[in-house]
Length: 116
Image 1 (cartoon, rainbow, N blue to C red):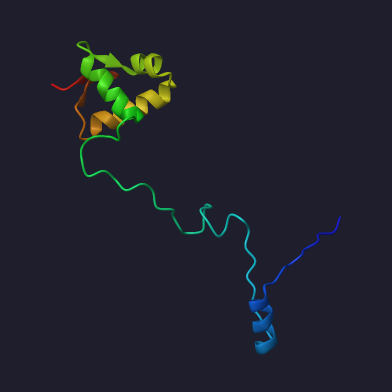
Image 2: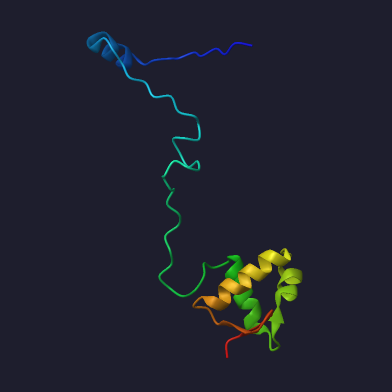
């Protein structure tokens, strides 16, 4: 099977080709010009919040609201059941909340409390 390449050039490109007698064309894959891996460029993310609160309605915000209402300590299994997350995701989320500037503290391995 042979590959077929069709190139459509605009009038400006054709005019530049006529004037300069040569034209340099760089071929790139669809991934290489944008956000693909390995090209050294990074797409900017959302700007970080300047407050200590997660975005309203986000999963961390919902977990914090839920934890605030609890009187007992809670763990990964509670988060897994309540928010329908995998154990790994729940564990990562609780760890991030406990290590960040949020009111959730780690009491001992796998046990977290709100405030203290």
